[in-house]
Image (cartoon, rainbow, N blue to C red; front, side, top):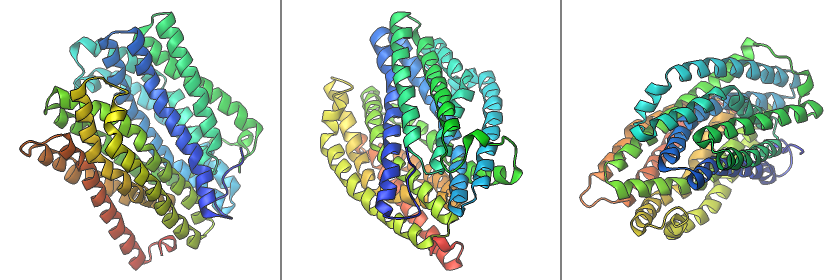
Length: 448
Protein backbone atom coordinates (compact mmCIF):
# COMPACT_ATOMS: atom_id res chain seq x y z
CA UNK A 1 0.00 0.00 0.00
CA UNK A 2 2.99 2.33 -0.52
CA UNK A 3 2.18 5.68 -2.05
CA UNK A 4 3.21 6.63 -5.60
CA UNK A 5 6.55 8.45 -5.73
CA UNK A 6 5.77 11.61 -7.69
CA UNK A 7 8.95 13.44 -6.75
CA UNK A 8 11.61 10.96 -7.89
CA UNK A 9 12.31 8.35 -10.53
CA UNK A 10 10.36 7.65 -13.72
CA UNK A 11 7.55 10.11 -14.35
CA UNK A 12 5.49 7.59 -16.32
CA UNK A 13 5.95 4.90 -13.66
CA UNK A 14 4.86 7.30 -10.91
CA UNK A 15 1.78 8.39 -12.87
CA UNK A 16 0.76 4.86 -13.84
CA UNK A 17 1.36 3.53 -10.32
CA UNK A 18 -1.13 6.14 -9.11
CA UNK A 19 -3.53 6.10 -12.08
CA UNK A 20 -4.24 2.36 -12.30
CA UNK A 21 -5.82 2.14 -8.80
CA UNK A 22 -7.73 5.38 -9.51
CA UNK A 23 -9.10 3.86 -12.72
CA UNK A 24 -9.95 0.67 -10.83
CA UNK A 25 -11.82 2.67 -8.20
CA UNK A 26 -13.76 4.58 -10.86
CA UNK A 27 -14.68 1.32 -12.60
CA UNK A 28 -15.92 -0.10 -9.30
CA UNK A 29 -17.94 3.06 -8.64
CA UNK A 30 -19.55 2.75 -12.08
CA UNK A 31 -20.36 -0.91 -11.38
CA UNK A 32 -21.50 0.10 -7.91
CA UNK A 33 -24.02 2.53 -9.43
CA UNK A 34 -25.23 -0.04 -11.95
CA UNK A 35 -25.79 -2.68 -9.25
CA UNK A 36 -28.88 -0.96 -7.80
CA UNK A 37 -30.46 -0.68 -11.26
CA UNK A 38 -29.58 -4.28 -12.14
CA UNK A 39 -31.04 -5.81 -8.97
CA UNK A 40 -34.12 -3.56 -9.01
CA UNK A 41 -34.68 -4.64 -12.63
CA UNK A 42 -34.60 -8.29 -11.53
CA UNK A 43 -37.14 -8.04 -8.70
CA UNK A 44 -39.24 -4.88 -9.18
CA UNK A 45 -41.40 -3.04 -11.71
CA UNK A 46 -40.71 -0.21 -14.16
CA UNK A 47 -41.74 2.46 -11.64
CA UNK A 48 -39.08 1.21 -9.23
CA UNK A 49 -36.50 1.14 -12.02
CA UNK A 50 -37.35 4.70 -12.99
CA UNK A 51 -37.27 5.77 -9.33
CA UNK A 52 -33.77 4.42 -8.73
CA UNK A 53 -32.51 5.68 -12.09
CA UNK A 54 -33.80 9.22 -11.63
CA UNK A 55 -32.94 9.31 -7.93
CA UNK A 56 -29.38 8.26 -8.78
CA UNK A 57 -29.07 11.09 -11.31
CA UNK A 58 -30.21 13.62 -8.69
CA UNK A 59 -27.90 12.15 -6.03
CA UNK A 60 -24.95 12.09 -8.43
CA UNK A 61 -25.23 15.84 -8.89
CA UNK A 62 -24.87 16.26 -5.12
CA UNK A 63 -21.96 13.80 -4.92
CA UNK A 64 -20.10 15.22 -7.94
CA UNK A 65 -20.39 18.70 -6.44
CA UNK A 66 -18.96 17.55 -3.10
CA UNK A 67 -16.15 15.54 -4.71
CA UNK A 68 -15.18 18.49 -6.93
CA UNK A 69 -15.06 20.75 -3.87
CA UNK A 70 -12.96 18.14 -2.06
CA UNK A 71 -10.42 18.26 -4.91
CA UNK A 72 -9.25 21.45 -3.20
CA UNK A 73 -8.11 19.28 -0.28
CA UNK A 74 -6.29 16.88 -2.61
CA UNK A 75 -4.33 19.75 -4.13
CA UNK A 76 -3.56 21.61 -0.87
CA UNK A 77 -2.45 18.44 0.93
CA UNK A 78 -0.38 17.38 -2.08
CA UNK A 79 1.38 20.74 -2.21
CA UNK A 80 2.23 20.55 1.52
CA UNK A 81 3.61 17.02 1.08
CA UNK A 82 5.76 18.27 -1.79
CA UNK A 83 7.02 21.10 0.43
CA UNK A 84 7.89 18.57 3.13
CA UNK A 85 5.46 20.35 5.49
CA UNK A 86 3.75 17.36 7.10
CA UNK A 87 2.31 19.47 9.92
CA UNK A 88 0.54 21.74 7.43
CA UNK A 89 -0.69 18.68 5.55
CA UNK A 90 -2.15 17.32 8.80
CA UNK A 91 -3.81 20.69 9.50
CA UNK A 92 -5.28 20.68 5.99
CA UNK A 93 -6.66 17.18 6.56
CA UNK A 94 -8.16 18.23 9.90
CA UNK A 95 -9.68 21.34 8.33
CA UNK A 96 -11.11 19.22 5.51
CA UNK A 97 -12.90 16.90 7.92
CA UNK A 98 -14.45 19.79 9.87
CA UNK A 99 -15.37 21.75 6.74
CA UNK A 100 -17.12 18.88 5.01
CA UNK A 101 -18.86 17.75 8.17
CA UNK A 102 -20.49 21.19 8.36
CA UNK A 103 -21.28 21.28 4.63
CA UNK A 104 -22.81 17.79 4.63
CA UNK A 105 -25.08 18.53 7.63
CA UNK A 106 -26.33 21.83 6.19
CA UNK A 107 -26.67 20.26 2.75
CA UNK A 108 -28.68 17.35 4.12
CA UNK A 109 -31.18 19.65 5.82
CA UNK A 110 -31.63 21.90 2.78
CA UNK A 111 -31.96 19.07 0.25
CA UNK A 112 -34.45 17.17 2.43
CA UNK A 113 -36.59 20.32 2.67
CA UNK A 114 -36.53 20.96 -1.09
CA UNK A 115 -36.67 17.35 -2.32
CA UNK A 116 -40.14 17.68 -3.96
CA UNK A 117 -39.06 20.79 -5.85
CA UNK A 118 -35.83 19.11 -7.00
CA UNK A 119 -37.71 16.08 -8.33
CA UNK A 120 -40.29 18.25 -10.10
CA UNK A 121 -37.44 20.07 -11.87
CA UNK A 122 -36.20 16.67 -13.08
CA UNK A 123 -39.68 15.96 -14.51
CA UNK A 124 -40.03 12.64 -12.69
CA UNK A 125 -42.98 10.66 -14.16
CA UNK A 126 -46.04 10.78 -11.88
CA UNK A 127 -46.22 6.99 -11.54
CA UNK A 128 -42.60 6.88 -10.33
CA UNK A 129 -42.56 10.04 -8.20
CA UNK A 130 -43.24 8.40 -4.83
CA UNK A 131 -40.56 5.74 -5.27
CA UNK A 132 -38.06 8.29 -6.56
CA UNK A 133 -38.69 10.43 -3.49
CA UNK A 134 -38.24 7.47 -1.12
CA UNK A 135 -34.92 6.48 -2.73
CA UNK A 136 -33.63 10.04 -2.90
CA UNK A 137 -34.59 10.99 0.67
CA UNK A 138 -32.87 7.92 2.17
CA UNK A 139 -29.70 8.58 0.17
CA UNK A 140 -29.75 12.27 1.13
CA UNK A 141 -30.17 11.20 4.77
CA UNK A 142 -26.84 9.43 4.43
CA UNK A 143 -25.06 12.46 2.96
CA UNK A 144 -22.73 12.73 5.97
CA UNK A 145 -21.59 9.14 5.43
CA UNK A 146 -21.32 9.54 1.65
CA UNK A 147 -19.33 12.75 2.10
CA UNK A 148 -16.95 11.11 4.59
CA UNK A 149 -16.48 8.21 2.18
CA UNK A 150 -15.43 10.54 -0.66
CA UNK A 151 -13.43 13.01 1.44
CA UNK A 152 -11.21 10.26 2.88
CA UNK A 153 -10.35 9.17 -0.66
CA UNK A 154 -9.51 12.77 -1.65
CA UNK A 155 -7.21 13.16 1.36
CA UNK A 156 -5.43 9.89 0.55
CA UNK A 157 -4.89 10.90 -3.08
CA UNK A 158 -3.42 14.19 -1.92
CA UNK A 159 -0.89 12.12 0.02
CA UNK A 160 -0.06 10.21 -3.17
CA UNK A 161 -1.85 6.98 -2.21
CA UNK A 162 -4.54 5.75 -4.61
CA UNK A 163 -4.40 2.08 -3.58
CA UNK A 164 -6.23 2.48 -0.26
CA UNK A 165 -9.13 4.43 -1.85
CA UNK A 166 -9.42 1.56 -4.35
CA UNK A 167 -9.61 -0.91 -1.44
CA UNK A 168 -12.27 1.18 0.30
CA UNK A 169 -14.36 1.38 -2.89
CA UNK A 170 -14.02 -2.38 -3.37
CA UNK A 171 -15.35 -3.00 0.14
CA UNK A 172 -18.28 -0.65 -0.45
CA UNK A 173 -19.06 -2.26 -3.81
CA UNK A 174 -19.17 -5.80 -2.39
CA UNK A 175 -21.31 -4.78 0.60
CA UNK A 176 -23.68 -2.80 -1.64
CA UNK A 177 -24.27 -5.68 -4.06
CA UNK A 178 -24.83 -8.13 -1.18
CA UNK A 179 -27.15 -5.61 0.49
CA UNK A 180 -29.16 -5.16 -2.70
CA UNK A 181 -29.83 -8.87 -3.07
CA UNK A 182 -30.67 -9.29 0.64
CA UNK A 183 -32.89 -6.23 1.07
CA UNK A 184 -34.52 -6.13 -2.38
CA UNK A 185 -34.58 -9.80 -3.37
CA UNK A 186 -34.85 -11.31 0.11
CA UNK A 187 -36.96 -8.84 2.08
CA UNK A 188 -38.78 -7.16 -0.82
CA UNK A 189 -37.88 -3.66 0.34
CA UNK A 190 -37.91 -2.28 -3.22
CA UNK A 191 -36.28 1.16 -3.71
CA UNK A 192 -35.88 1.68 0.05
CA UNK A 193 -33.71 -1.44 0.16
CA UNK A 194 -31.53 -0.14 -2.67
CA UNK A 195 -31.02 3.20 -0.89
CA UNK A 196 -30.31 1.60 2.50
CA UNK A 197 -27.79 -0.79 0.90
CA UNK A 198 -26.02 2.18 -0.72
CA UNK A 199 -25.70 4.20 2.48
CA UNK A 200 -24.84 1.19 4.67
CA UNK A 201 -22.11 -0.01 2.29
CA UNK A 202 -20.43 3.37 2.41
CA UNK A 203 -20.74 3.45 6.20
CA UNK A 204 -18.92 0.10 6.36
CA UNK A 205 -16.23 1.48 4.05
CA UNK A 206 -15.81 4.61 6.23
CA UNK A 207 -15.46 2.54 9.42
CA UNK A 208 -12.88 0.25 7.81
CA UNK A 209 -10.96 3.22 6.39
CA UNK A 210 -10.82 4.99 9.78
CA UNK A 211 -9.52 1.82 11.46
CA UNK A 212 -6.86 1.34 8.77
CA UNK A 213 -5.74 4.97 8.68
CA UNK A 214 -5.35 5.20 12.45
CA UNK A 215 -2.94 2.28 12.39
CA UNK A 216 -0.66 3.34 9.54
CA UNK A 217 1.25 6.43 8.43
CA UNK A 218 1.10 7.81 4.89
CA UNK A 219 2.91 11.15 4.96
CA UNK A 220 0.91 12.20 8.03
CA UNK A 221 -0.17 10.40 11.18
CA UNK A 222 -3.98 10.13 10.98
CA UNK A 223 -4.14 9.15 14.64
CA UNK A 224 -2.80 12.61 15.54
CA UNK A 225 -4.81 14.76 13.16
CA UNK A 226 -6.14 17.78 15.03
CA UNK A 227 -9.64 18.71 13.99
CA UNK A 228 -10.04 22.44 13.67
CA UNK A 229 -11.04 25.32 11.41
CA UNK A 230 -7.49 26.39 10.46
CA UNK A 231 -8.67 29.47 8.48
CA UNK A 232 -5.60 29.61 6.24
CA UNK A 233 -5.97 25.99 5.12
CA UNK A 234 -9.75 26.26 4.70
CA UNK A 235 -9.30 29.38 2.59
CA UNK A 236 -6.87 27.54 0.29
CA UNK A 237 -9.17 24.52 0.02
CA UNK A 238 -12.23 26.63 -0.83
CA UNK A 239 -10.30 28.87 -3.23
CA UNK A 240 -9.35 25.82 -5.27
CA UNK A 241 -12.46 23.72 -4.68
CA UNK A 242 -15.33 26.19 -5.20
CA UNK A 243 -14.52 26.93 -8.88
CA UNK A 244 -14.23 23.18 -9.52
CA UNK A 245 -17.58 22.54 -7.83
CA UNK A 246 -19.35 25.27 -9.81
CA UNK A 247 -17.76 24.00 -13.03
CA UNK A 248 -18.85 20.42 -12.35
CA UNK A 249 -22.42 21.42 -11.47
CA UNK A 250 -22.66 23.55 -14.64
CA UNK A 251 -21.49 20.63 -16.76
CA UNK A 252 -23.99 18.27 -15.11
CA UNK A 253 -26.84 20.71 -15.72
CA UNK A 254 -25.81 21.07 -19.36
CA UNK A 255 -26.05 17.30 -19.78
CA UNK A 256 -29.57 17.38 -18.30
CA UNK A 257 -30.45 19.95 -20.98
CA UNK A 258 -28.86 17.68 -23.60
CA UNK A 259 -31.10 14.88 -22.37
CA UNK A 260 -34.16 17.10 -22.83
CA UNK A 261 -33.06 18.03 -26.37
CA UNK A 262 -32.71 14.38 -27.35
CA UNK A 263 -35.99 13.43 -25.65
CA UNK A 264 -37.70 15.84 -28.05
CA UNK A 265 -36.34 13.87 -31.03
CA UNK A 266 -38.47 10.81 -30.18
CA UNK A 267 -38.76 7.72 -28.01
CA UNK A 268 -36.21 5.61 -29.92
CA UNK A 269 -33.64 8.41 -29.81
CA UNK A 270 -34.28 8.91 -26.10
CA UNK A 271 -33.84 5.21 -25.36
CA UNK A 272 -30.75 5.00 -27.58
CA UNK A 273 -29.17 7.96 -25.83
CA UNK A 274 -29.88 6.37 -22.46
CA UNK A 275 -28.08 3.17 -23.48
CA UNK A 276 -25.19 5.13 -25.03
CA UNK A 277 -24.72 7.13 -21.84
CA UNK A 278 -24.26 3.93 -19.82
CA UNK A 279 -21.42 2.90 -22.14
CA UNK A 280 -19.88 6.38 -22.35
CA UNK A 281 -19.76 6.52 -18.56
CA UNK A 282 -17.20 3.70 -18.72
CA UNK A 283 -15.30 5.22 -21.67
CA UNK A 284 -14.82 8.52 -19.83
CA UNK A 285 -13.31 6.83 -16.79
CA UNK A 286 -9.86 6.82 -18.43
CA UNK A 287 -9.63 10.61 -18.93
CA UNK A 288 -11.11 11.13 -15.44
CA UNK A 289 -8.44 8.90 -13.88
CA UNK A 290 -5.80 10.76 -15.92
CA UNK A 291 -7.04 14.13 -14.64
CA UNK A 292 -7.01 13.03 -10.98
CA UNK A 293 -3.52 11.56 -11.39
CA UNK A 294 -2.07 14.65 -13.08
CA UNK A 295 -3.64 16.87 -10.39
CA UNK A 296 -1.99 14.89 -7.58
CA UNK A 297 1.34 14.62 -9.47
CA UNK A 298 1.49 18.34 -10.24
CA UNK A 299 0.41 19.35 -6.71
CA UNK A 300 3.28 17.50 -5.02
CA UNK A 301 5.91 18.64 -7.54
CA UNK A 302 4.57 22.19 -7.37
CA UNK A 303 5.05 22.13 -3.61
CA UNK A 304 8.59 20.80 -4.12
CA UNK A 305 9.23 23.40 -6.88
CA UNK A 306 10.08 20.64 -9.37
CA UNK A 307 8.88 22.72 -12.31
CA UNK A 308 10.75 20.80 -15.01
CA UNK A 309 9.25 17.55 -13.72
CA UNK A 310 5.76 19.09 -13.90
CA UNK A 311 6.26 19.97 -17.56
CA UNK A 312 7.58 16.47 -18.30
CA UNK A 313 4.67 14.81 -16.50
CA UNK A 314 2.12 17.00 -18.29
CA UNK A 315 3.49 16.21 -21.74
CA UNK A 316 3.94 12.49 -21.12
CA UNK A 317 0.46 12.15 -19.62
CA UNK A 318 -1.05 13.70 -22.76
CA UNK A 319 0.94 11.38 -25.02
CA UNK A 320 0.22 8.19 -23.05
CA UNK A 321 -3.45 9.06 -22.59
CA UNK A 322 -3.94 9.87 -26.27
CA UNK A 323 -2.32 6.63 -27.42
CA UNK A 324 -4.49 4.57 -25.10
CA UNK A 325 -7.67 6.51 -25.90
CA UNK A 326 -7.10 6.07 -29.64
CA UNK A 327 -7.71 2.37 -29.05
CA UNK A 328 -10.85 3.24 -27.09
CA UNK A 329 -12.00 5.41 -30.02
CA UNK A 330 -11.64 2.53 -32.49
CA UNK A 331 -13.53 0.14 -30.20
CA UNK A 332 -16.29 2.69 -29.60
CA UNK A 333 -16.69 3.78 -33.23
CA UNK A 334 -16.84 0.30 -34.72
CA UNK A 335 -18.14 -1.73 -31.76
CA UNK A 336 -20.70 0.63 -30.22
CA UNK A 337 -23.60 -1.42 -31.59
CA UNK A 338 -22.24 -4.66 -30.22
CA UNK A 339 -21.69 -3.13 -26.78
CA UNK A 340 -25.22 -1.67 -26.80
CA UNK A 341 -26.66 -5.19 -27.06
CA UNK A 342 -25.68 -5.73 -23.42
CA UNK A 343 -28.46 -3.31 -22.43
CA UNK A 344 -31.21 -3.88 -25.01
CA UNK A 345 -32.33 -6.28 -27.73
CA UNK A 346 -34.35 -3.70 -29.67
CA UNK A 347 -32.62 -3.24 -33.10
CA UNK A 348 -33.84 0.36 -33.47
CA UNK A 349 -32.54 1.36 -30.03
CA UNK A 350 -29.23 -0.42 -30.67
CA UNK A 351 -28.80 1.48 -33.93
CA UNK A 352 -29.66 4.81 -32.29
CA UNK A 353 -27.19 4.12 -29.47
CA UNK A 354 -24.45 3.19 -31.95
CA UNK A 355 -25.03 6.37 -33.95
CA UNK A 356 -24.62 8.56 -30.87
CA UNK A 357 -21.51 6.66 -29.77
CA UNK A 358 -19.97 7.08 -33.24
CA UNK A 359 -20.46 10.85 -33.13
CA UNK A 360 -19.23 11.05 -29.55
CA UNK A 361 -16.26 8.69 -30.05
CA UNK A 362 -14.00 11.36 -31.59
CA UNK A 363 -14.04 12.93 -28.15
CA UNK A 364 -12.12 9.90 -26.80
CA UNK A 365 -8.93 11.07 -28.54
CA UNK A 366 -9.33 14.79 -27.83
CA UNK A 367 -10.38 14.66 -24.20
CA UNK A 368 -7.05 13.39 -22.84
CA UNK A 369 -5.41 16.71 -23.74
CA UNK A 370 -8.31 18.58 -22.15
CA UNK A 371 -8.31 16.57 -18.91
CA UNK A 372 -4.51 16.66 -18.58
CA UNK A 373 -4.69 20.46 -18.87
CA UNK A 374 -7.37 20.55 -16.16
CA UNK A 375 -5.10 18.40 -13.98
CA UNK A 376 -2.17 20.78 -14.56
CA UNK A 377 -4.16 23.86 -13.58
CA UNK A 378 -5.81 22.09 -10.62
CA UNK A 379 -2.45 20.95 -9.29
CA UNK A 380 -1.00 24.46 -9.38
CA UNK A 381 -4.12 25.88 -7.75
CA UNK A 382 -5.33 27.80 -10.83
CA UNK A 383 -8.92 26.55 -10.83
CA UNK A 384 -10.59 29.77 -12.02
CA UNK A 385 -9.67 29.08 -15.67
CA UNK A 386 -11.10 25.58 -15.20
CA UNK A 387 -14.33 27.16 -13.97
CA UNK A 388 -14.50 29.57 -16.91
CA UNK A 389 -13.83 26.82 -19.43
CA UNK A 390 -16.50 24.57 -17.94
CA UNK A 391 -19.16 27.28 -17.76
CA UNK A 392 -18.51 28.80 -21.18
CA UNK A 393 -18.21 25.45 -22.93
CA UNK A 394 -21.56 24.35 -21.48
CA UNK A 395 -23.45 27.58 -22.18
CA UNK A 396 -22.00 28.80 -25.48
CA UNK A 397 -20.83 25.54 -27.09
CA UNK A 398 -22.34 22.25 -25.85
CA UNK A 399 -26.01 23.26 -25.59
CA UNK A 400 -26.16 25.53 -28.70
CA UNK A 401 -24.28 23.01 -30.86
CA UNK A 402 -26.58 20.18 -29.72
CA UNK A 403 -29.63 22.32 -30.53
CA UNK A 404 -28.22 23.26 -33.93
CA UNK A 405 -27.16 19.73 -34.88
CA UNK A 406 -30.47 18.22 -33.78
CA UNK A 407 -32.39 20.70 -35.95
CA UNK A 408 -30.62 19.72 -39.18
CA UNK A 409 -32.96 18.04 -41.67
CA UNK A 410 -32.63 14.28 -41.24
CA UNK A 411 -30.52 14.68 -38.11
CA UNK A 412 -29.70 11.51 -36.18
CA UNK A 413 -27.99 10.90 -32.86
CA UNK A 414 -24.68 10.79 -34.75
CA UNK A 415 -25.00 14.51 -35.42
CA UNK A 416 -25.97 15.29 -31.82
CA UNK A 417 -23.07 13.14 -30.60
CA UNK A 418 -20.68 15.46 -32.44
CA UNK A 419 -21.50 18.17 -29.89
CA UNK A 420 -19.10 16.45 -27.46
CA UNK A 421 -15.90 16.63 -29.59
CA UNK A 422 -16.84 20.14 -30.76
CA UNK A 423 -17.05 21.22 -27.11
CA UNK A 424 -13.73 19.56 -26.30
CA UNK A 425 -11.99 21.32 -29.21
CA UNK A 426 -13.19 24.60 -27.72
CA UNK A 427 -11.84 23.52 -24.31
CA UNK A 428 -8.45 22.62 -25.77
CA UNK A 429 -8.15 26.00 -27.49
CA UNK A 430 -9.29 27.74 -24.28
CA UNK A 431 -6.61 26.06 -22.16
CA UNK A 432 -3.91 26.49 -24.81
CA UNK A 433 -4.58 30.23 -24.87
CA UNK A 434 -4.74 30.31 -21.05
CA UNK A 435 -1.37 28.59 -20.66
CA UNK A 436 0.25 30.82 -23.32
CA UNK A 437 -1.00 33.94 -21.51
CA UNK A 438 0.25 32.61 -18.15
CA UNK A 439 3.66 31.94 -19.68
CA UNK A 440 3.93 35.43 -21.10
CA UNK A 441 2.89 36.99 -17.83
CA UNK A 442 5.14 34.57 -15.97
CA UNK A 443 2.17 33.86 -13.71
CA UNK A 444 3.66 30.58 -12.58
CA UNK A 445 7.08 29.02 -13.07
CA UNK A 446 5.41 25.64 -13.23
CA UNK A 447 3.88 26.59 -16.57
CA UNK A 448 7.08 27.96 -18.17
